[in-house]
Image (cartoon, rainbow, N blue to C red; front, top):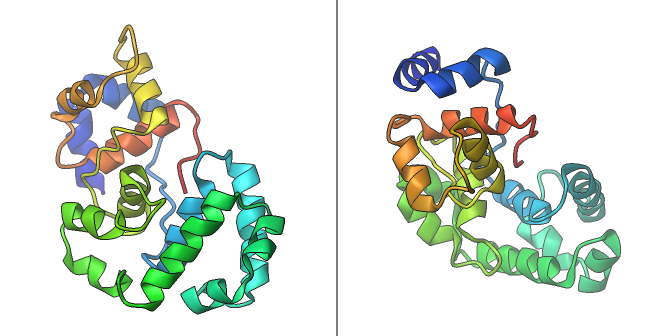
Length: 201
């Protein structure tokens, strides 16, 4: 990781300043398993504290750790709604559980796939979009060169750090990130830190 930090500091003076203020790289990783993707779905469009409360209730309800597709499918949808999940998220999580149980989604295969192949594999699940998979790539699979162009936090941080008039488009983000490659994941983490954001997972 020291090599990546030195590379980013050398290639981008603006990011170097952010790294200097934010300090050491201390990302929290999770395992690349079913439960982690369920967590990502729970966290979509919620603040961290509310999402954690709902996720902990779900984890308590399934009564197995780590969470399994079979345990999710044993829960009644009404039970999942009472926990605090929206109707949509209940459907998404149950769909992921069904597809994982039936072998349509195979977490054990992911380590051998490219980033793009993983996006294609997981976005077949309704409710799992590109952003969710990119968070999984960064925080679970530890892929070093992921640029989450749809992440509002990274966009806001880029606007502020690079003195942009508006939130950058995906193309503008890619242009800025040329100097970050092959370490866009690390640079993105520092973008979140620059906003004192606690990350996405």
